[in-house]
Image (cartoon, rainbow, N blue to C red; front, side, top):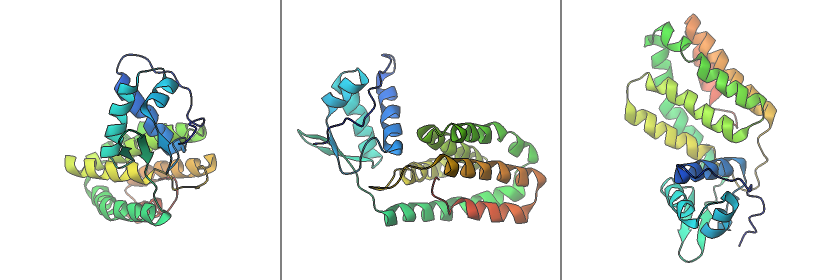
Length: 217
């Protein structure tokens, strides 16, 4: 049983407790505070968050549906261990799904649609500058959702976002993502938007394909 000393003793406001616990656990997964392969109990995590075990268990059950943890009867929840290969495969599937859609949108979406995404790109830059890994993970997915939503296919957005979330969970022993890597990734969002606004399709294609080769995504 993991000591759980690495999980922040963050208190949760009572309203929307389950949702807040779920977001806190998702952030802990991305940040490496919930360690792959370790077992965590609902009561112990509830004590950390200042809530009962019930919302923790409910949140963990949602994470089990998302493939982040597995339920162990009478023991708690074990964080799923992913290999570097599995994470690379997730990135590859994302690229196969998102790159063609982005390139099609580059030819069909109006310039006004791209300029409207500047605040979303700025949010990723702000999280990156702060070195906020969980915050960056959320804003990064929000940016990609906003882009893909322009295709008008809700199923595409849902599937791509699920793949993106899974790809953000670190492999065991992986080093914490550096602030410099986050900043570089966020800069690609801004560069891509400016190329889309300028309708420079050659640069857009180069940036889109490059964007799926780095670590932070």
